[in-house]
Image 1 (cartoon, protein in one colour):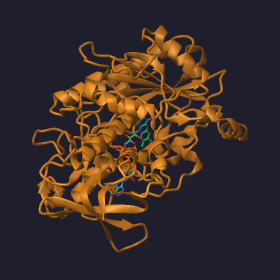
Image 2 (cartoon, protein in one colour):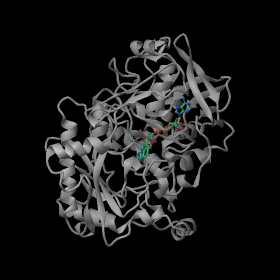
Image 3 (cartoon, protein in one colour):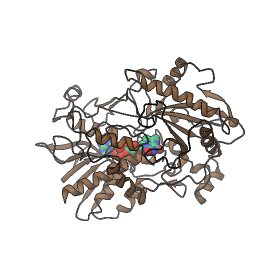
Image 4 (cartoon, helix red, strand yellow):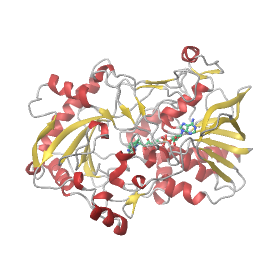
Length: 515
Ligand SMILES: Cc1cc2nc3c(=O)[nH]c(=O)nc-3n(C[C@H](O)[C@H](O)[C@H](O)COP(=O)(O)OP(=O)(O)OC[C@H]3O[C@@H](n4cnc5c(N)ncnc54)[C@H](O)[C@@H]3O)c2cc1C
């Protein structure tokens, strides 16, 4: 029996296990479905997309997306000690002051910018340091200059809270290697006698009795018999924006109609579980280059040696090296579009390794109006849930319009020096695609996820909310959620550092409630 059982050792789970076990009087069990192995690709920054579809990825796809030509999009998420933080692009961009003030205004008291800032600062000052890339690619420098020539101001700190502009992206690295929550939070904590970590352990159900969580049932890899882990004080589900609603639904917590369809007995009706799936959709210009080497040739014995011996060279690139946050709609309260620059062709949703030199200038929808669902297909815990982000389905078509305008802005940047001199023609969508219809067709044919699913167990106080502002599952005792799924809206940035912040605050809330 442990005091606290944490399910999922991704970004949130690593932070929680570390912070909770700082109290020697609290015993903590961390359960993770994936393995503890760490192949070389998890350390080499430029290799992150090689982990897609590996044994460290759940290997999901979305259901067919009606507004994206019916495509089933590749939807990577980490399945390992470290979770998605082991295969992410290491960008550290927390979003805007307006995002967190918006959370507070929507009933999430305690989560305004001023209130969450100390948790961000605490992480950055210690286990989650922000670094600069040791060797910026010359094309990235050219992009940042070209964006300024196109009228986007230089932003020296993209995490200032009101950054509108272009800048170099801070990364989670140390000495040219990935430095994730696994390195900063979990590893130093693993020596503690009050922390147990079990990998290859997939939770199949939260054990509930008379409205209280008593622990979880889980199955060890390769075994058929289920085990139980009992929690004397709390169960915290940190299985991510897909895994968390899935586990709650398997436990009979969710919408009655969905549970009944899947043949699962309703234990606690909570219709919001699995709704409000938000994600950042991305697309972009793929541009052939001349007169410059890109990351397409980064993988060579010489570069591997440079990386291994000195932590330098192109393999230290996190690929997405620079970004711009812009306000396309004059009435938007904060940036509504992000440009992301990568000095390599990012093709076929990251599954294709580049065969020629080029760069990617991506546009990202920062504040999507469309939202979707995560839904149980059956009561079999090993059957993946149906992931339906419903991209670009907002009734007014505002999401599509923003991305079309974003593509035009990206082309304006592309036309500026010093970037223009390296460009040797658009591969996608191609210079001929000019009209709104042609650009919309390009969006349908090749948009992809930016890997930021969130919102599926959203925090709030209204009937649709799943957790209250202290992250307790509404209507149940001894059960919290802490991960990307509690976000009521997506930050207009990226999600990893915000999840670190959420877990830091969750640890504070849990320790305060157990004191
Ligand atoms: C390819 C990719 C690139 C990304 N790039 C960036 C980036 O550059 N910058 C950024 O800010 N964000 C990025 N993100 C997003 C960011 O990494 C995530 O938002 C963040 O890691 C989510 O943290 P989490 O704790 O909510 O979930 P995860 O980190 O996904 O952790 C969930 C964990 O729970 C485990 N789990 C699930 N179900 C169960 C179960 N039933 N039993 C036991 N364990 C279970 C999973 O295996 C996983 O380890 C990226 C994500 C991906 C996938």
